[in-house]
Image 1 (cartoon, rainbow, N blue to C red):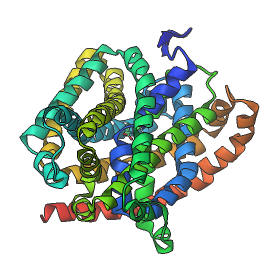
Image 2 (tube, rainbow, N blue to C red; image 1 turned 180 degrees about the vertical axis):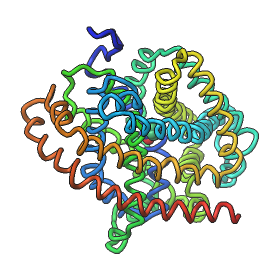
Image 3 (tube, protein in one colour; image 1 turned 120 degrees about the horizontal axis):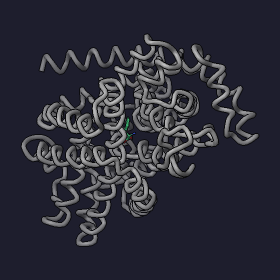
Length: 449
Ligand code: PHE
């Protein structure tokens, strides 16, 4: 980052912004959550709906956040207040809460990836991956890895060493992609892979019409693209007006989808080839951590080497996401309470670490938090942002979408605005309603044991 003429920090290069946004988007959402959502609801139908929703919700909402952030030049609370008045500013507090809640369990899963990476070196992968996952996913060890991961995240946010992380992710994101594609090709050679492809790639018509599949797909679009909690808004607040916003949103969305898609091409053949269906449906949340180590175990010694790199790169992909989550919380607290970066990041990081002990010791609590914060609250936050951009400040949004865009993308702006105003808000509202219903019954089930 370099200082811009206005004195505010700004991205030094256009690629730096793309990298930060893609780094926030690509993470456990692609590798862990996508296969887990697909196996839980609808299989290939969810994949198809997901692609459609990238266009109807993902790209327009990302553009709404980009436009608000670049226009407002402040963290979410400040930008919304400056552009829409104090009542809108209060919406920003929801984002702080959501960032807080998502990070508290995301860091637990990130801790699993570190653990599996270390295990690859120290003891190799367990023959029964499902039993091993059950043994290590919650409890004292999970807490320890979660605490360690939060400490690393907090130190980075305190130091504000965005440059280093950005440069690192320039290398790591392509490495992750190459590894996942390579492993997906290997998975294609497994006996019985076809059954996995059938589940992943051949949609059933009745599932395409199932509102629950749409709800889960929408939740996944929000989570995977880091939308609905002001993360993309915050990054865009460090932008100058020469960035091509529509093109950036499209590139980030499809990069993100590419990683998730190949993760599925790896996970599903493995599940069916190694007959892990039972284990995975007993713990869909562990699908990745059951399927992938089984594959590495079958590869023998090489599996340990590939496995180490796989989990290492995944942990690094996760840290570029946890940084963005803690950054939203930290930046907001700094703005609103006038705290220093150090104080804000340390106190918030510690509080999140403590809350995370709950999901680190209870897998059901982790799943529930993911429904509440990782789906419902993102949908509600996104709905509010869509209404704000499309109806409260549409002229400013049009202006921002055109500024810096090439002629091709300028011609798309009316279409983007149409979707942003008329298609996305009602669609998200309906899906948020389904999410509310689903979350309410999940809460009830959780508390009745
Ligand atoms: N998009 C990240 C992922 O897919 C998670 C995330 C959600 C990050 C919300 C920031 C905000 O892993």
